Amino acid sequence: MVDDRINTMINMNNIVFQRGHQTILSHVDLSVKKGEFLGLVGPNGSGKSTLIQIMLGLLEPDGGTVSLFEQPLEKFKHWERIGYVSQKAASVNLGFPATVYEVVSMGMFSKVGLFRFLNRHHKKKIDETLEQVGMLEYKHRNIGELSGGQQQRVFIARALVSEPEILILDEPTVGVDAATVQHFYQLLSRLNREQELTLLLVTHDVGVMTKYVSHVACLQQTLHFHGSAEDFEESDLTSMYGENIEILSHQHGGHS
Amino acid sequence: MEAFLQYDFLRNALIAGILIGFTAPVLGVFIVVRRLALLTDALSHITLTGIAFHLFLSQTLSVLTGLSPVYMGMIFAAAGSLFIEKLRTVYTAYQELAVPIILSSAIGLGVIFISLADGFNQDLFAYLFGSVIAVSKGDLGAVTGIAIFVTIVLILFYKQLLFIAFDENQARVSGIPVKSMNLLFIIMTALVIATSMQLVGILLVSSLMTLPVAAALQAAKSFRQMFVYSVIVGEASVLIGMISAFYLDVSSGGMIVLAALVLLLASMLYRKASGRAVFHPGRQKEAAVE
Image (cartoon, rainbow over all chains, first blue to last red; front, side, top):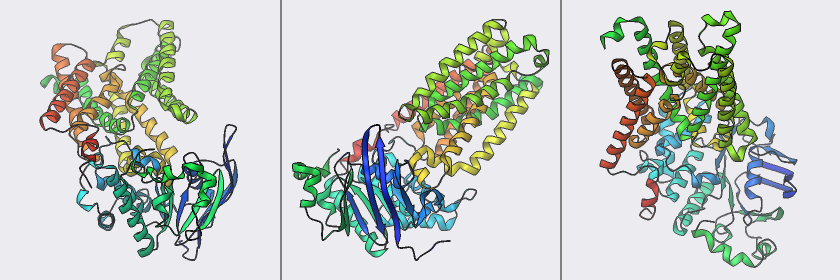
């Protein structure tokens, strides 16, 4: 069922997306290989989130193809292999009456199957994952009582609990303070190194991210750079961000 | 209380009330957390259209006179729910627009059918505001069947419904068939509303789906507790409301809503006394953590 030899986890080919007469994405090719920690950067409105939504089948592209684990998107069924933390998670309904445990258990559902219930093994896994992100002591707390950074860690735990092979994070640090962002990247980097978890991180915040990722892709309607983090230079960004680059890299503390 | 056990029609009403006191708040939990509370109003009004259509048709088709108008109400509510789902996908950015569209068209059509039929009569009044004597044996059968159906669906699909309620996109990426689950859920809601309306009344049925849940929100610490508290408040409202309505000789729907409202206010006082704020507990602590 699960093929371990697969090397290309995500492959997007010639993606085109238009909204009305406006071109959001123009002929984008993007691939994520096993073991990579890829940072997808680009200014606000550059089409990053659109690209991710197309990747996950939430949006239909106007052109191009997507394959996940070397299978065409339409035929892909093994969603438990992909963990996804959406941008929206940062602004989740704070009044939602669910505990941290209940939120993380949702991530287990794709693994448990349609007519089954969580067993002791699943519950243990939930505890372990909460431990991993340092949130176990908050297990019975209401999700709304936590800070933005803590909530984000709970959402990571939810994405991790089904033991995905790739984790996709869409602007996970929006609205989180700088110190927490640092911890957060350290956590991701550790998961990438120790558990060989492939990561795709979407962010407009170039500054801190480049220290942790192995590869970088720059998006502004089309891909401007796609390569290893060592080859990536600040000059690659100026074509995209223009003079505002300084301002952007300092913006990570606040809302955008 | 003895009267409820003594007379058949009251016993029917009591059993139906207990079943509705369970199904309505349980579905209400999902509806409220998804911020779709007004949806229940739209569905109850389309049920009224169905009832009015039945009353109009039964003037010419004698076959229908023996049949309860509830079934026509159920058909209309189910059809209306499908239309609402369609509208929600067409107007993704304006999902709340589906509610006024359905609500006003339902009332418009309903009023036409009512005036084509007899105009307002005693029967219709009972449907609008609820009556304990309106529940027949056949109606009780429908209420029971739907309660069983709802319970089975919730046991089987609790996980999926919870995930969709919390985050629809995430649920979709986890491989949950969001579209079919939404469809199943809204049809279930329509059926519960259609069968609840005899006791609570079309204009008041949404209250049984929202007031107990609003009360539960004040005290619940988890999603599971939401169901426990909502059902407790729902059952208490139905029982207090029905029994007092019978002895005071007033509309059962009105008394049920009144009981639910009193319980809601009590829960708000409890919340205030225990010093917790609802809906934005995260904000005040934001600065303190980490």
